[in-house]
Amino acid sequence: MLTKDKKDISPLLATLNQLHPLSNEITNFLTDKISSRNFRKGAMLLKEGNVCESIYFIKRGAIRGFIKDGSRDITTWISAENEIVTSIAGLNQRAPSAENIQTVEFCETLMLSYSHLQELYQNYIEFNINGRKLLEMYYQDAENRAYVSRITGTEQKYRYFLKRYPHLVNRIPIKYIASFLGVTLETLSRTRKKFAE
Amino acid sequence: MLTKDKKDISPLLATLNQLHPLSNEITNFLTDKISSRNFRKGAMLLKEGNVCESIYFIKRGAIRGFIKDGSRDITTWISAENEIVTSIAGLNQRAPSAENIQTVEFCETLMLSYSHLQELYQNYIEFNINGRKLLEMYYQDAENRAYVSRITGTEQKYRYFLKRYPHLVNRIPIKYIASFLGVTLETLSRTRKKFAE
DNA sequence: AAATAATGTTGATATTAGTCAAAGTCGTTT
DNA sequence: AAACGACTTTGACTAATATCAACATTATTT
Image (cartoon, rainbow over all chains, first blue to last red; front, side, top):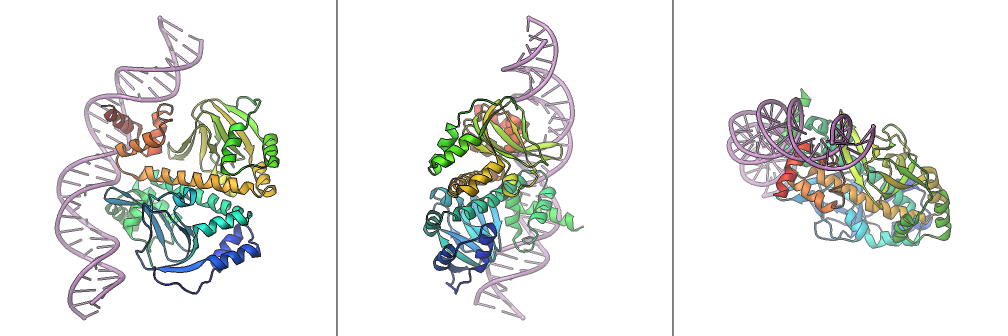
């Protein structure tokens, strides 16, 4: 963690309001409990084996989730501006995460602790509407990620990536994109070259 | 669809109550609106391009989701007893599904229409707690499915399948398991043989 | 600006898994 | 019981991708 900044939580409020309008009480609670956190490139927000204590909204930068598979890592997701990241294992069962969470760039985030999130869900029942809708969206995303890793042919996979994540293509090191797609970086490098031609 | 049976919705109520206790009003609403539906083996509950109009709870049997990738299918999930299945695309955005949903065995299900589900969420706000928690669980599952398709080595994949889905191993045709794991059925057949030795 | 580290490319080779085809097994129907 | 269909195994061969290693390029630090 780098600094604890003056916070502007409006982008998060906008995201949540789009799903279901937030009451003043909820807006005030969020304004009170959320803190701003910046992270240097490569910082670990969560290491496997630990229970994730927070949920982060990305104001600027990109963050990935990855799992260790022997000596190599498998990047399981990559998120950027206006997305929310956390360990689903922590959210769902307060269980130690098998997943690691790491910034890929310098990041400005908004952080809400898990316990405050639970307080929200318990004390402001209608906030569960926001949570439910958010999870519907993220679930679909997870399905899509499972899909891309199963389609055959590196070219088809990369084509999918270009279409779905155009904003990340020139920001994320090829090694992360490769493992996200389920290929080696060398193979992806060659495939990408064919595309340029 | 085969028959519309006398319904016993208690297994679904048990599942939902475990997440958050249901009020009498909600229980009555569900009892009223849910219908029992049986399907023969191989029946299509949803064909790609259509908007999914219902959500199903599996009382007996197994159901898979799959996506067409050229001429072959990719099985994206396999669910069985006491699980809920639907097209997430339909749930989330009322959009035509890219996914097909098909029974793998004779199935007894409980069906709730999408519009009644929306009624529940709107009129009984606390039901969003059940929905939110359910989605947290299913989201984690989706993450895990994405993970297994990315790990390398058919042996490792199959080992994961055995561990995570022991109840399905002897029920689901190898061709579905293979595409779920992201390998061909021949490769899976050979790998499985090595296991037996 | 030079030095260093991180990232990306390319080539040669090995390995794995895919493809195509045939035959075997199992269960269901007639 | 024979015939059919669905599922599974096996073999020979091919194609795709991984691996290992060297080098090139681009960023970052000093």
